Image (cartoon, rainbow, N blue to C red; front, side, top):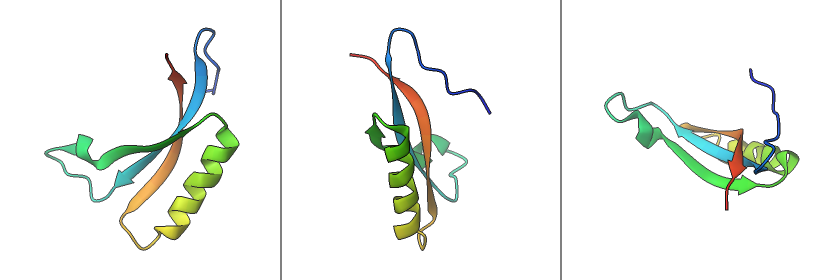
Length: 71
């Protein structure tokens, strides 16, 4: 796992990404979707947890990734 280091020039934000299973081996890029982006890691993790809970019957998973906001 990498260290979550802020970038010196860009604001750090936290994207919730949904992965849909099973992964389509011919088009794997169709199985990942950025759902929401938050400025707070804690808020993003709470929302990902909520989404995982309410969609637990479906074949997907939500996870949080740090990224940069570029204007």
